[in-house]
Image (cartoon, rainbow, N blue to C red; front, side, top):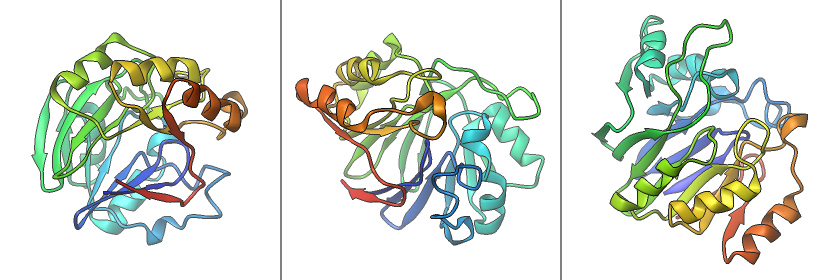
Length: 226
């Protein structure tokens, strides 16, 4: 599994021969818009954790460019289906076997609405069980006891957690979250994009390291392989 960071909560996952894009927000992100050309991105599936603009801005254009299927909660799926895009609706606690692995839609504590105020359903995260590796993409969330349910059924190889604070968990709560999900390998997201969520990179890494954990903060366009 290859994971590429495109800024904020946007990730590209290469799982076998399948390309999965998560929460595409690139053209409106000053940190990524000049580095990533959305017309060149590949996507067979687009996973959306919730409806906020900093997670959905480029979803429609990329889906129409690539023919990707949008996977999201019922309300978000309906929104894009009305635009002629193929969708797969989900809801909390449900899972589905896709060609790239099993995907479960899990709880997140946040809000969810489209930029025009239209209701975007309840926010969530995704647990993806691939053939060889399992990852948790938390989306935007506070620290929640529901995270303790994840390791009861899935042993994680990596967790993607928000660490920017103010709108989501900060670094300290993300460390507790990593305990709850029993995963010490963390990819940070949802930081630096706006003034409210700028972080001290070295201090964040140090706090994780002191707890025996590995926090990865990737540059825009940088990839890792599991």
